Length: 275
Picture 1: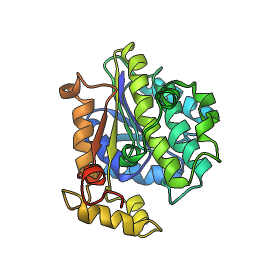
Picture 2: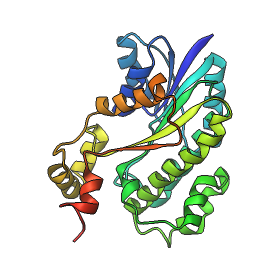
Picture 3: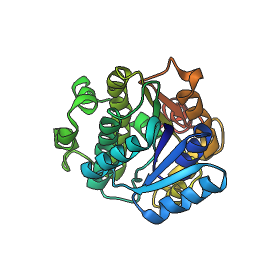
């Protein structure tokens, strides 16, 4: 029976991670748009990987459950890479929360019942979750533990409580890390592990949209004033993912790895601190 890597999201970060952990495995690559999945699959196929594609809307329970069934029918699902999502410049508040928060919770729920013993997964969160102000302990527990279908009904996620799309994105990404921490307990009962990576500005087409969008000046300032003094690359994220998903990371689960060139450090203690 084949070992299967499920990659949700056809962007550069997800593809780089898949390349780093999927030698000898079948890659099931799913995206909202068939043409994006096919284009990324060609890159992987040309590099020698065995790939098939699927279409999935991560905010649709029937879609995600169908993807889980498809993956399970192919073999042992040993790796999950969840790298799908929108940006605060690309979608309204409701869509950001539905895709990035609810969609991630749904993927974790479904694949937590599919992942093989000894398997592992990573969810791509964001540095933005680390710059959200403090939540109450009840709010944190609610983001981590509320049943998936009730998640978007939480009082502090309602339109009159969420200031703008960036605030929605920060809540979603903080929620991703908290959700993964809670899900690590359930995944552990299957002998599997799950972690989040919270990248900073990684040069991808999505990041280029942000750098030229309404918040572009702020993002360019982050790059210039962070301790590392540059943006990151997809391959650098993949190196961390390979550690987390491989045997060297066997003692790591339920954790969130911030890799942002020190932007968050500078935000709290350096030149990027709010005036």
